[in-house]
Image 1: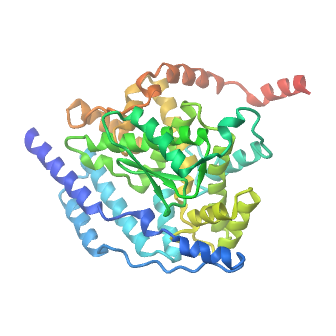
Image 2: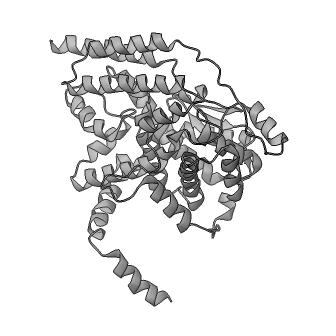
Image 3: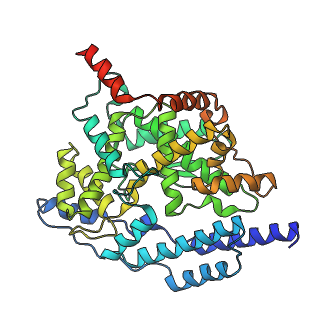
Length: 418
């Protein structure tokens, strides 16, 4: 196929993929409404919530046919077409997951798409759950030692909206990014192509607003806009469950790189993985609710956190929604990817993490396509990606530090400190 014809083919397939996935919205399809929350809290928190998920608002069979039609036109030996083929497969699995809401099969498909707590990192020694427990133990009893003013929740959703809007305007001066207050969120915030939603009734600290700018703005919104600006592979603006792992990991990594992460934040990420593991092992909604109360969550926040874990699955336990392992799993994956990219002097691969919604495995392929003008350089990048001198310095020192026996170092300094 001639170059010009092939570009038209890829663009047509990309648009068809966007059209096929358009109505498939995972989180809204498994949302547990506030009426369930009010009923549970008013019944002294002793009865399992009951909720029947409404029928999907789109035809699963029709969507399946559309993805099968796209796949039939692809050559899996071609790297970019293989990415599209795998994306179709992922959406087909997502349809199966959403069709099985409220059953144990929902959890089976969720594990396949997002992973699960006992899943081991590359190297095989430790799991996502091991990291969650390490964080939980490392920061047990942590109290804010400084900068209390920045960490006291005192911004209501309206005040947070004003502050966040101002900072996003600086980040995207040529785009209109709306900040919306919503009563349908179980998280404190969520982002789309041109908006950030804040949870009605939530209170925010100034540090949390900074975290949202880095997490939602510099990563989720930026990668959406960069993907949408692609002249041919426009589907890169649309996330799938497997790209979600890397998106959430990249967003947490961005919080680290901007020095906005703190023990309170990472403990909350750890709680999510621990709760999923508890639910896998049989904990029901009330067990999860009580677990979050033990972590000093309010009753309202404890309900929302438990609902995040169990939405789409079974209130009686044993079948959680595993998406929230993505934060820790993705962070480790991104850390390792960036580490190796810096060690190999490939900073361009770190930039291309922001070219759209990508997995680490697809980044080199997408970069190679940019050399043939099939993919455009990402426009919206954090400062630590535009100038990778810090990354290069840090990870090269880190590579050497890995050669040192840490247990001997700890023994030496513990002796001095005791």
